[in-house]
Length: 376
Image (cartoon, rainbow, N blue to C red):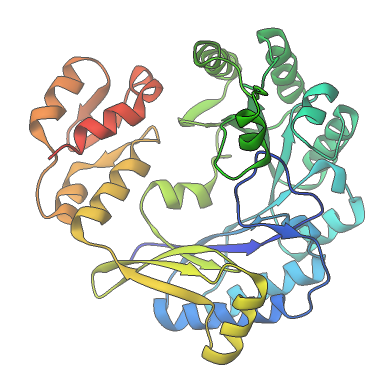
């Protein structure tokens, strides 16, 4: 049986960023959410049976609003239910919450990776993005994190209106000089329902042109790869032994637990993959756990086509690609040969034995590639 990843969604934020479309809520005191999460984990253990856990990831929202004792309680519960020997345990944090005592407390509780939402070191960019920190705070938080945790990942946003290649070069040089062993780079996109989407409807541009965005992405790739980073996923770069094991579970199509308000999960039961979604609001989630024993709001059996499509879409994002054998097993039929061969001949896909992966050129147009592969 494949390994199991565990995702914990802590939905509270001190401030909601104008580009964010995650399931988040303004920070408040909540003594009911943690007990509900711990009880929901026990329900997931009943679903999964005995499995080897590969990772625990605290996401959000802002899970760094959790105390070390709360983080420790989750880790201890997962350990008691499945075991946690030698696994990756990561938590997302924001620079303005820099707190040496809490971060050392997280490390003592078992956390061995911190994902830091730097986004930029330029004060004007951070104000534009609605962040609560400035460039100096971001640098201090990054240095502190690297001094405490064995592995650190830094998030960087590019493509914001007004950004130049010089701005981006400066951000990248700081991350490299600081010794960040993992960097996640995200192109700013405008999601429906966000404050940035509303600004766009008023004629206030929030992103650079698509041509400049492509140039910035290419700059990121060249800079980081020449600095010793592996471009192992479309948006992610890592030094050796610092790839995100938790995110790889998603991209490789493994099962994962999803607990906390709005969390998504995937579980294979009787050789059939199921998609789960937890109740969205903290109140609905905690009430559901109290009355039914679980926070799961829906559990849908994925059709063979759905499971195979998901595997393809996620798997082609990573450098190792997908197993054509596994795709055929999931889909109950082979991939679209009429589209596959032309994409290989055009240099967008690479087939090595029974592995299929996207080339560097293919990653630039990955949505179009996958759309063609999935034509019926």
